Length: 147
Image 1: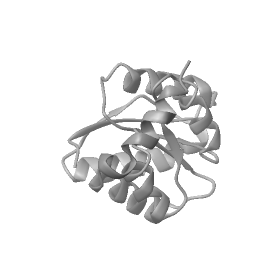
Image 2: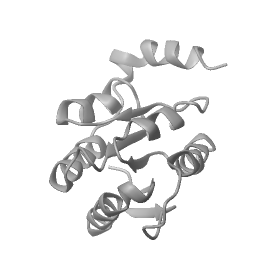
Image 3: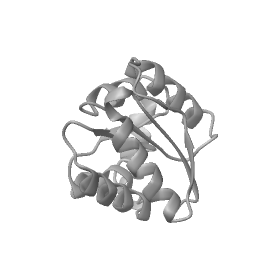
């Protein structure tokens, strides 16, 4: 399991983000919370951009983004070259997002995914690793699509 990651949300995802952060810190993981820190409205692309750039620059190996559905944050993060972000709504996707797709970022929808499930999916994602022998060529092909 990794020992540090970065997390961010818009105003809709703040409470779920805070729950995930507390959960990870209780496991000894260092969490850089880039906001939002209060309930003031913020546009999710602004937070998604900050986090994706940090992953892109290798400041962090993995990150978590939370908005209303998780879809918007995934779209934003995937705009950045070399970034693979997956919106996670079930345990199997949490596992395969890293094992098969080497996703550095997972996203959650706070209006869709409850706290217990988000914590479970986060743990699954963090305890798994990329299976390069099985999926390496496929991820290389994805990376080749970056312009």
